[in-house]
Length: 316
Image (tube, rainbow, N blue to C red; front, side, top):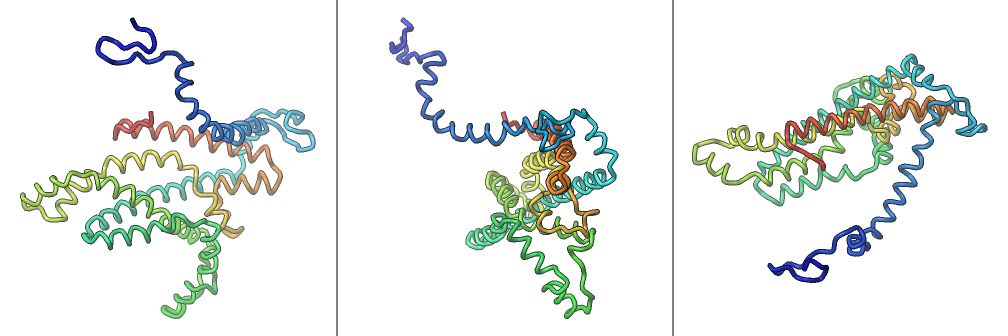
C-alpha cells in the first residue's frame, strides 16, 4: 500500500515524491529555460560586481581591484554637486508628468472608443493609435528634430498662418519638457488604451441593461458603471508606475536633447552617460546610477504594497 505506481482505494495513482521525481518529469522545461537563465546570469548578474567602482577612485589602468578605495566620497559629492540636484529634479518632474498623462489620456480615450458601436471603426482606430508604440525613438527623434527645427514644417505653418517668429522648440528648456511629455504620451497611449479596453471587456453587460431599464443615459452609465469598473486597473497602473519615477526615458531624451536644454532636460540616465562614459568619471557615474536604482527599488516595493492594499493586486 502506498508504493509508487500502485493505485489507492479510491482509484487515484500515488504521485512520485521527491526532487528526483520532479526533475525527471520536468527536465525538458528546465532545458528550455536554461539559455535564458545563462544569458540573464551573464548580462544581469555578473556585471553587478562592477558596482564596487562606485566606492573606489577607479582608474582603468589600475583595474577595479587595484584602484584606491574611497568609500562614500562619490555619493557625498553627488549631493553636493549642483548639477546632480538639478538632474534629479528634472528626472522626477519629467517622469512624473509622463506617468500622470500616460494614465489620464489612455483612460479618457478608452472611454470614448468604448462608445463607438461599429467594431470595424473601433478596431481601425485602435490599430492606428497603437502603431507608434513600435517605432524606435532613434527614428522618431530624427523626424521630430526635422519637424521642430527653426525651418521645419511646424514653424513654417506657425509663420504662414499666424505670422509668428520661429520658436526654438528643442532649444528652450520649457518647450523641451513640453515636447518630451507630449511625444511620449503620443507614442505610449495606444498601449495604455488597450489595457483599459481589455478591462472594459470584462464588465458585465447586464449592468448596462439594468441601467437602461432604470432610465440612465450613456453619460450616467459611464459615471455609474464604466468608470467604477476601471478604477481597480487605474489604481494598479498608477501605483506600479511610481517605481518608474526615476526613469524619464533615456532613448527619447538622448535623441532629442542638446547642450541648450541641459538645465531643464538633462535626466539621471543621460547625466550618467555623459559624466561616466564621455567624461571618464566612471566611479561618479556608477554612484549616481546606484542611487537611482535604490530609489527605484524602494518605490517599486511601496507601489506593490499600495496596489495590494487598494486593489488587492499581487504578483506572487
